[in-house]
Image (cartoon, rainbow, N blue to C red; front, side, top):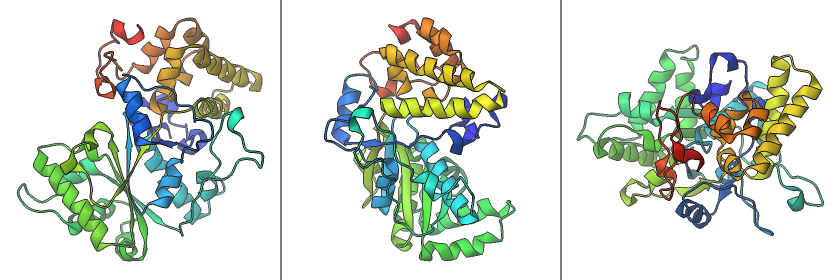
Length: 353
């Protein structure tokens, strides 16, 4: 469902939208490239340089047993976590379309970058892994010891088991404990969203690092906003770091096509109408530098197809009003990604200057 993309953009009318139907694979970029984009005060559309290949987020996860995935707000960190877990579960259950084949499908590339031998699947060399998602904000609230006490791997294990206790798969907790040693994929989402004082964040770091040491066969992915991970004392020891890149033009186009291909039949639209709306939205984005800037963020792009492409083509402000129905992206020029604010107020006048 769309809430698998992000609950903030889900609505009652969208409850039938499946993440697997619209998900578009994410890319990573070199840290220095991302830093240059931030220093210019905006998230720009990233087109691969000639001769350079950006690794996909999945390729990074495949390459590193311990990985921190960084990204700006709306870049797709939680969506990536949910999609990986969904596909691994689908593979284990023998699902026809939600599986490793869907997970590893080739990334979209622009026409100039297409290879003569055709697109290649993304790498995934892992055996069947049991995915376990932990929202670190919830772990901090209910799984950590009192302030002043050191946290360790057992606190994280106990929290996961407690989460399973009230579900239909409670009996799986014992089997899962064996998987810590046999191999699993623990997805720790939202390192930067841990509430409370620095002490609680230090405990999270202790628990994650001790878990990685205690259960050496387990693979770990931690997500965090980029700016929050810059503090030296907050960085995890012996974890590789990758950063999500904004959508390229090819990724934007593929997402729009998939969205309309999925939502069109649900709205009982004719095929030609679906294709026309997708084409109109892609053209609107291509013709507007400001819309292109916003479309490079997957979360914002996920909101637009529910508006009217023609209205956005005529006036970008209509797209801005639509994407800010639930929260406002208010950009202070020259301040970089930190200036994106969550607010119930209408967008300020500077948003489209």
